[in-house]
Length: 377
Image 1 (cartoon, rainbow, N blue to C red):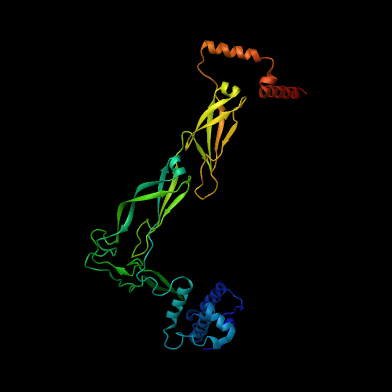
Image 2: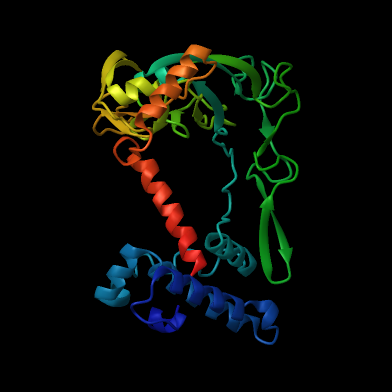
């Protein structure tokens, strides 16, 4: 083999990365294929083998380091192995090379195993369980390994046989022009084996469907959209492959009193007109029981009161949130004649002194009057 500089053979610089090395070798291999060089196929084969030797060295980080430091003397023991005389014909080498570059490769499909599919389960929780945490049992349909045939798919006492189409590799090679393309074997579908006498329970699939019961531990503080992963509780793998995972998607049902906002809880507290005007004490609910809320005199609707530490501790850590109570003044309904007369008497008693008793209403009226006055100008 020629002892030309390997970088020169591939036409790349000494700082070329792995992608550039692959691209250069692909270009060289395409250029020197015998189908494109019918006048001198022997010369093309020599050029190709020279490029293959350079590619083998420079695409291997350890060999490349040795070559960069010592030249050909540092890699002579490993360079060129398997590409000289008697190493198989050129089309075999070419097919193997392109299999390596594009993810194929000879024999890669033998007894191929596959990881099982992941599963998703939608779990509904009430707010109390989401905040405090709980353990819930769920039933899910899934594919599990067949116990009758131990997952082989073959009837008990028999076993799968090597596929005669692909010889057990799981892939077949098709020559298309100057390309040698590898495809999944259409007979065994990439398994490398066939089953002539399938198991009666799983019908040759190696897996059967069944419902299984799982205990899901819900950590305190989960919220809408959170996922709980149960490793290995998904579908069973094929041909001995590992099982998938189960992802439990959390959906928190609406609560009759509280609304969650991150670590905080929100609630509306209706109060009477008298309590808003005179003040008073109210009992308000929390997720841990009742607490007293002091309403000061002259409280306006929409005012927010904060109860520290009565919210939620987030599942990912952090401070416990607060309970935010929004006061809403409720207008009395279904009044008796006596109650209506009392309200009219009260209204008359404050009439004419709105700026003291109804500052917001008085300010609003003044603003409306100014608005219409400005329109007349």
